[in-house]
Length: 227
Ligand code: ATP
Image (cartoon, rainbow, N blue to C red; front, side, top):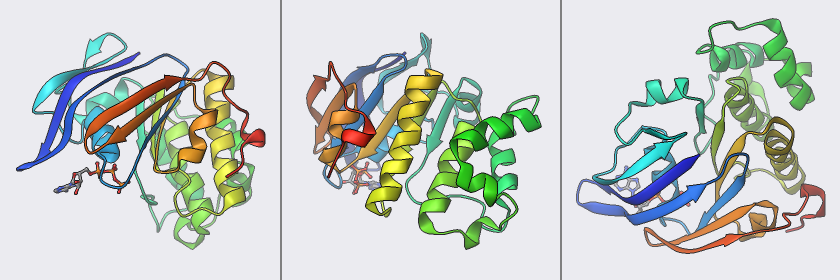
């Protein structure tokens, strides 16, 4: 459903992504793993249209999206959860989620209730100002906002970054449920190799290049994973 071919991305003179090619199958969980500076976030930003490659191509659901603008890509069913907690700090939890669902034509209470089934903690806190939530809760708001769009593909940049062990596991549980129960495709960018066993496909990067791609025939359940 996502196919990247020989993609090169630059920041001015800095060659951040150097001829990357890989495919992601529908409903898969893919872990994109590499050290700081390997080019992982740049790949997500490029797939979501926030940057454009100097050469190479990106296809999503058989459509060439190489030069498509980010706002149009959102309508194709692609959601990006950037690194950090980019949520609306002054709005309530519910208002943040409504912003996520904004691009859908009919935002109903039912959509929100569906999202809340994945995030019961956020349901309890729906009226709370998002900026006053704990770090882990804010991370969940960021993911919940993307989930509210009911995306075909969810691109998550360091979803467990800055979270404690148990909260990190809960967030991964939600992402695994998105894939297994809703059939969504999930790409997780991380520097934490320990996450690899839960992925269907593990793409390792080094210095702007893909160094290996492995397919896991039997990905682990989050509950079995320890790091
Ligand atoms: P991290 O795990 O630290 O987030 P990453 O694998 O996601 O790293 P990127 O953020 O994609 O790596 O960065 C890839 C390369 O591009 C790095 O050398 C980085 O310094 C460079 N880079 C990233 N953002 C910019 C920018 N805005 N301007 C210039 N260079 C940048």
